[in-house]
Length: 370
Image (cartoon, rainbow, N blue to C red; front, side, top):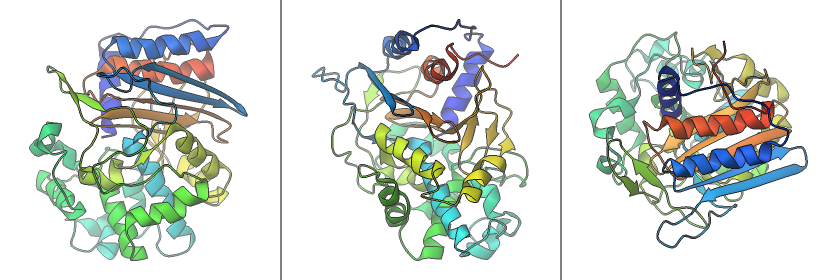
C-alpha cells in the first residue's frame, strides 16, 4: 500500500518531529543508529544495502524471528509492496516500445466497460496516477489486514470495489493502487499471458533477479524475516504468509535487496528499456505536493534530498513489510532498506528510513525543504 509512507511522513512533519541534522565525517555509524532507532521504536528487523559504484555496505538491526532471535538474513526475501509498480511499468513500456499499445490509448479502447468513464482515461494517466480513479484500499473491507489478507480476490473484484467508491475526473495527481491493477489487466489482455509470467520473462530473467516473483501462493519461501503489522492502537501481529491477490500488480511482488539493485542497474543501463523510454519515466513526472517525494513519473517517484541530489525509485508498504529503494539516474549509487513491520501510523519508522537515504547522499538526516 504505497500511500502509507507518504501519509505518515506528512503526519510527522505536521507534528514537527523533523529536525535539521549535521553532516558526519563517517556516515556508517549514523546509518546504524537509524536502523537501531527503528528497532527501538518496535520494528522487529531491518536490512540495508548501500551501493556506491563497486563498494557495498550492508547492515542489519533487530532479528528475523522474535521467538528464536535468529539474525536478519542479508539475502532474505520480502514483500516489496509498491516497488512492484516499477516492474509493471517496465513491462508496459516494453509493449509500448514494440508498438503493441500506446500511452495515449484509453481504458475504453483497451478494457471496455470495466471502469465508468474509461473512454476518457489514458494509459499514461494510469502510470502516473492522474486518472482520477479511487483506491480500492479505501473501502471498509480493507481497513484491517485481518479482514482481507487471507481472502482470494480477482483483479476485476478489486476494480469493482474501487468503482463502488466513486471516481473523480482525470487530471490531478491522486495515488491509487487501482491504476496498477488495471495496468496488470491491460498487460494480460495485450500479451494474452499471465502478468507473473510476463514479469519473469521481461524483467526478472533479463535483469538477473533470480529470487524475485509475483507470487500466487501465500508461502514466502527461502530465507526471510517474519513480517508483522500493527494497527494503532493495538498489538503487533505476526504476518508473513498471506494471499497476495489483494495486492497483485499494484504491490504484490517479492524480491531481495540485491535483486532490487539489479533491477535499477538493468533499467539504467538500457537492458530492460531503450534509454529514451527510461528517460520518459522520469521526465513525464507530475507534481504530488509532497516534500519528500515531490514528483511521480511513469511508475517511479522522485525523492527530494537536502543537498539537491535527485533520486528515483519507489516506496512501499504491505501488511508485513515496508521498503524503500532509491538510486541516482545512472544507478551507480543506490540505497535499499526494508523492515519487517507494516504500521500505517508509524511516522518514526518512515522518518528513520528517509534519514538513512539522505544520510548516504548528503551526510545529514532529511529535513523538509525551506
